[in-house]
Image 1: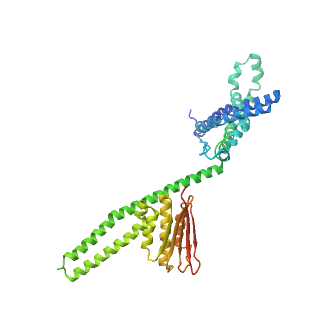
Image 2: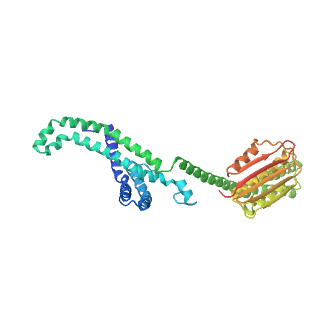
Image 3: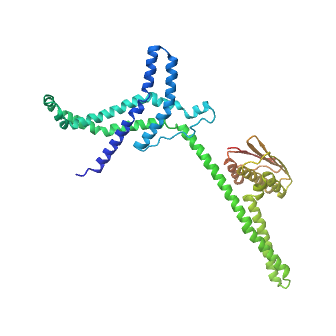
Length: 407
């Protein structure tokens, strides 16, 4: 005889739920002897201090063990993981650790909710036992003494019908009890919603930091490839074209003109590629730090730049990179759009914050929502920094960025 698939799944689910509930009875009753002993001690001796102190130590000691047992029970019997709180050790003092982990939620689950949950589990098990006893009444009634069996035979149909009804209701009863326990366990034994959100924020912060570092490393790789590959080929091309003009005076004028034009374009391409490479990630920034990179940037800027860099030690590579590009973009805007005559750059580290300030005496009126400044604001924001632009009409324009060096 083939059992229908739906009935088979129902039987398996009921068996799983019943096993899950049965395995929870003893862990849920584990702390009953503790508060029973405390109540008995107070009733007999009146010693509240002894009862409370000893029971508190026992409860605090047993709570992690019982929580681990419940996690194993949920994972093994119904395949559900009760999440752990990431910061399971006090790292910032006991008070902050207690506020973050909220161990009283677990204590309340085991100490206060344990007995009612055990009672609920025992009721479901009793329903299952009564249902099985009812539907199998005709089988076990023959084991009863003759007199008692005769009395029960008239009531066996009622017992069988009641047992059948209990077994029909058992899937929903067991499922409801298991789901109720699951919700309570997730809410009290696992991290709270605020804790889960905080853990997610921490994970995203770590992921974002890794992404920023990966992008910065890729930018450096591209800079090295362009500098050591494409740029060197262009330099070689320009040298060869120059040698061709210098060593072949017998070339026709048309050919010499074409070679001269190609030579000029090759040199212009080298200059443009050099600017591109510096824009990606200047090599001096990685080799010698922000001070040296800004000195070179100030020397290349067409207008006079007063540079003041006060750094006792180097910041992280991604922080230096963002600071460099903020200053580079600010000086470029001052040169191309603001008609500035001079600029001032101040870089200093105050505590764990790198402060960058660029001021020019140009026309002002810079659009903080423009593409260039918005890109800078996003780049600064990627490091949890702050970005501010002050540019009234008529000037001066001041761009300020604060970048945390410790994240």
